[in-house]
Amino acid sequence: MADQLDVNNAVGEVIDGVYQEVHSIDSFDEATDFELKHSPNIEIVEGANGQTVKVSIGLKGLSHPQTEEHYIEWIRLFVGENLIGVVNFSADQAPEANFEIKRDNQQVIAQALCNLHGVWESRA
Ligand SMILES: [Fe+2]
Image (spheres, helix red, strand yellow):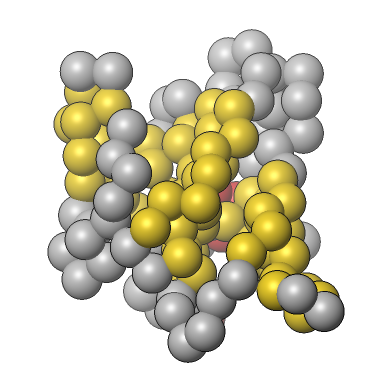
């Protein structure tokens, strides 16, 4: 798994021997329910010594299934091009993760892997 991200060219990578394109929403207003329920939701809470980034899966009130057949395998977070962490999930765990970060003006990039539908990304 990549620990560095080419933030300007994040088109895909090989995961477990399979090339995975990175999907993201181009137009929030025109996004389909399928896109909305796969996209990471990023909430950034300012603290005294940095930020807490709360990531869940699904936008506009939609959420992704979490069953043995269809589930979110992991969420990972980059600040700029640097990997901050990866949280793995089994089918009986809610796909939500908190990351403690310190950033200046860098972009926060959250990615999630659906076992059926690949890697999905949101930026904040
Ligand atoms: Fe999915």
